[in-house]
Image 1 (spheres, helix red, strand yellow):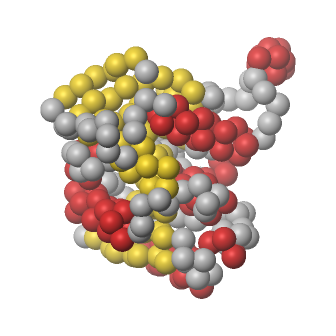
Image 2 (cartoon, helix red, strand yellow):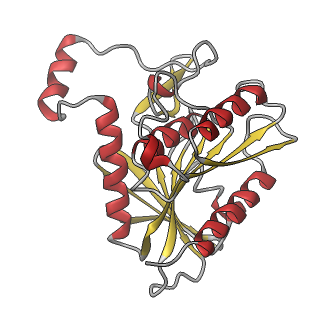
Length: 261
């Protein structure tokens, strides 16, 4: 990975893997002989791969390796690109002020079809995330059974979908001001999801996704036997320092309470 920037909190690197651009956070005083938990960071709508990487020092400066991934869909506002999205499958209907680009003309669709694999968006997303994880494990010492999905806003919806679809591949999900994606059978892997850990943290003044909606999502997951911790905070839909500190506490409790294999 080519170095992108470095500061007192850690370092960030950028590369392209399976059509998902990534950025990573390396803890201060990185110890190559220690197997670090990996946080797979999925940004909110209009953000990018660095959005949660920049927030990593507020989570912990030394406990984790972080892998920030960029959503595959460019977002426009007033005909100008403002960031990226995980796709319409994860949006909240009727609540977005962002627009995705206009449809491509037939010639451009044909050109891209010649160079891009023919697969549905969810398959490409899953392949991109798993390729990113493989790539960072080739550069840093990551504990294979301590890989957590951490999503913010729309990224939380993507984290829910990935974690609940592949509970054997992840140690848990953290949803920050997020929601369950629409038209997704969250409990379709009922047996495999038993005791799967989830942390949902939500702003009590979040007008985009009201607190009652977050509580309904948590109730749905708990009804399926999942271990869901839930906490609300006196804030809106943005990232909050207290939220991020509690994310660190929750993840480290799970890391220290489970046996190392």
